[in-house]
Length: 416
Ligand SMILES: [Zn+2]
Image (cartoon, rainbow, N blue to C red; front, side, top):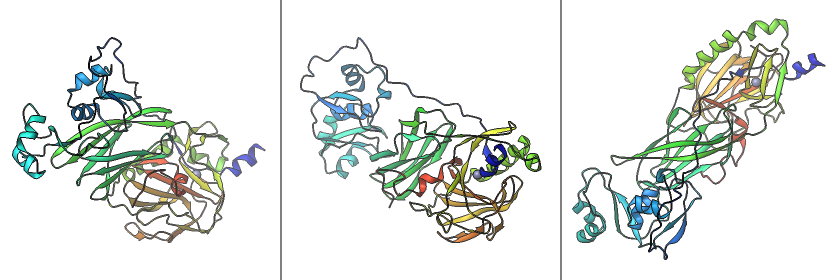
């Protein structure tokens, strides 16, 4: 029975158990004895939206930040979170804008058709690049940092091992980057007013709340803020696999690590142009079943421990392997453990890999179209039967590709 078990679960590549050191967020501290303002009876409740900053809310309300924070008994204004209720003065129908590089009070007013005197009346203190200026106009729906007009994260919570997408809408062309779990990744433009960024999460991180730092640059100004990312545990199985003697030389931890180190070069590739579209196409011509899911913890005879870094499909030898999206082949060669391997860069932070192939029909640098056959399923490398191991990297992290086959991979977000 034991022997039959490992034959069913085809041996394939696993990821090491090393876990990054993570910084969990903490709930915003509340000042127990902060004085309440005497004249705030007309104030109304405002529910903080994702990415909104208390400094912006204070500025729009015509208050300084310490005053608003004290009135709401908030000890650390930088840690207000989405869903938190703050009391704010009645809206004065004021808009906010940041002062651009080399923009004077006069050019600011003229550009918006405002009275110089009115802008000065509403904004005391020195004039400088980056200063948040209040001026008469329709009150903004959200109080996001300049130049954002909309911001969302999906899915929330996201299961570890899966991908979260950050979506940005801006008033003018902008660039941004996000920092999470020790890595900083670029945002990718969709058009002049929309950007997105991807967070690929390892199946091994602890569930909980992480903080993601967002940095946005536009018109010579840079703003940074942080938002929480809720990560759920998901359900992952455990497999104990007893490898046959003929394959045990490939179970050498040094060999496994060496191949992992070798692939680090490809994990670092970031191509700005996005070639993929959602949902991705299935990588095989027929819908075959899954023999091993992504994320299952594995132990090979106690020699190597880790988790399954891809999805194994019960495909038969010689079946054509199809590109799930347009892309460029960046690796096509024989590796010891992964066997005949192909990596396709789809741009915009997404790469897919195909291991244990019997034949490779593409070369490095070659473009493939969505649905195009580029290799045949096989049983090469650390494998005991023909199958397709489908790997997916999001910003270099192995994630569950099955999410990307769903039309609803990122609920609530629209990619043009
Ligand atoms: Zn596999």
